[in-house]
Amino acid sequence: MEIKKLSYDYVSDIAIFANNKKIADNLRDIFPHPYTEENARQFVEFCIDTPESKQVNRAIFHDDKAVGVISLTLGEDVYAKSAEIGYWLAELYWGKGIMTDAARQMCCIAFGQYNLARLFAAVYSYNKESCKVLEKCGFEMEGVLKKSVFKNGQFFDSYMYGLVN
Image (cartoon, rainbow, N blue to C red; front, side, top):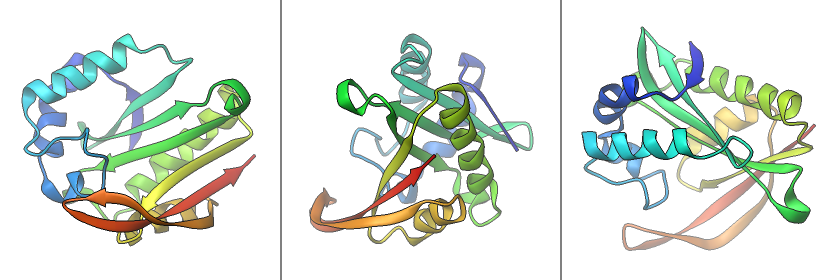
């Protein structure tokens, strides 16, 4: 497993692996389902065009395929030393430690290259697997945000996780 900067070469892989309702159900509504090749092309274009001083996006590679994406959205103003980490991984690769490895690499980039003091993630309360990924990387649950998510016509709590350098 390795993480690489996004490229148009990865559009087909991303389109195939992202087109999964189980993935979309764990992400913000901006992540569509069904997920088309055009969605993937637009996403890659956004990643290429967005300066890494604002957002750091990487493709997660396994078996010579882009099987997921991991990102840091860098804070601004008084939050300039913090970033939100977000990610998704193809269902075929769940439970194999791939996302944990990718998250650890991204934490190293955040704290090393970007000199950040804090990373955080808001995880939907039903997404126990994502909680485990973060916990294996040293994140701690800092709180519960009651009814903070309205997804698929229902309210859910979210868990705020943080990792301090």
